[in-house]
Image 1: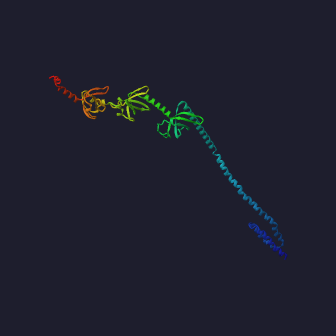
Image 2: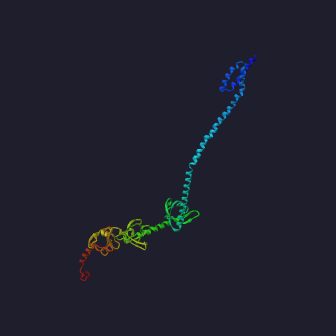
Image 3: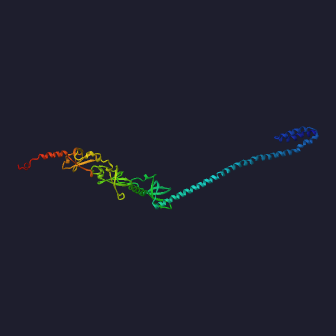
Length: 391
């Protein structure tokens, strides 16, 4: 009975170690192999009891397995920094590569900044020198302000007073905005780096230079384009350009007789003139309008023959009868021969050329019908005694 009890107890002891390592198949097989040994005679009890003594040894590896797994769980942690090490090194390599380019760019930027600073200093020194030597500079008109205009001169701000703009009275200052104009430096503010300029003085100097150049180029006898700027009783003033004026006397306005300059030309009319005289360094210039026209005395030389009878048109009858024989060819009949009141302006009559003055361009005409009538009347006079009532 005791043996049976012992035999029956042994499987109970052996079942516990077999159930604990379920995940470890080799240990389970050893237990199964040991079960037949438990059914053997008593000498095998010591062998059946050996697993009881080995249970702590079997449990030791079980306790060590988590210890072996712990480094396995730590291995990714150790590998993660290893995987990150190249990633951390790559930006370092990339940051180190552009260092030469960034240094070159910094040097280029510094060189460009130095060049701009030198250019700005040179521009300012030129403005300072322009005030002393009177040099003309150019500026761009930016915007109107109170009392004038702001201009940009080589990057520096300048003030252009309204009185120095040179615009005509009534013209708004805004007409100069966004235009490039010549300027004279009037004042320089070293502390604020600003200047006061004048456009009017620059224009005046420019016109003086152009005027002198034009006067030096004038030659007597040459023809020039001109514009009528003013009319007077003794002639017309014309602008030859650059403010150079010349006088065209009344006698030089046309080949025919002119009573008033306004009868021939008007202000603003453009015409060609011939230079007659240049005196006092261009202060007095005489010109001729008719000198630039075709000469009617040459074109109509066939009518300029003494004793020739020809038809003409009445053009005036103030103190004498003025008759036009051809365009630009006129003559007059004395009031002793005809009564001007007997004729109308524009009426066509026959005249006879009595005398020709080529130097002064004058023609003296006569009425052939009046001369014939005078001849007839002279032969019908009564005898002298009959007229006196003596016979």
